[in-house]
Image (tube, rainbow, N blue to C red; front, top):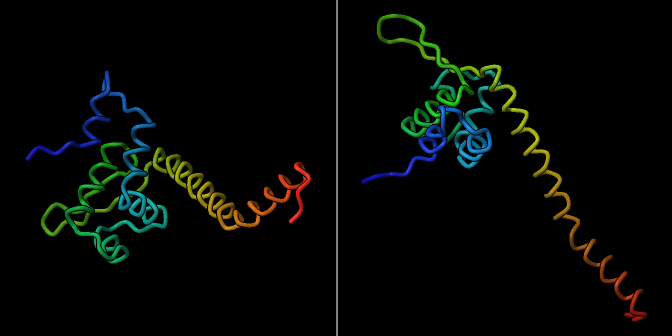
Length: 139
């Protein structure tokens, strides 16, 4: 079975330049990637900590997402020790911290949209009243 990998398409750009818009789409479009980045920003570093913090996340999916984030240069993988068991840690890179500002802005935008949706019935009533005033109708 052949699977289409959006990351492979992102990395296949000319001159191996990763297009930021495609990278954002690939990361934001994946629920676990965003959560793993949040955990990295909160100073969680070990894969076991990620798994404990994300119920429902499998080790396989976690490793795939961390590998993708590493390829994008958003997180850095560090292996401590030479003999098994080695310790692996993931940290945000300087680019990763810049990338987090994009995610923070998306979160703020979502909050603003949610606030507007919550007040939408009131806004719709206000629009209806204004339309009635323009047409001279009364309710």
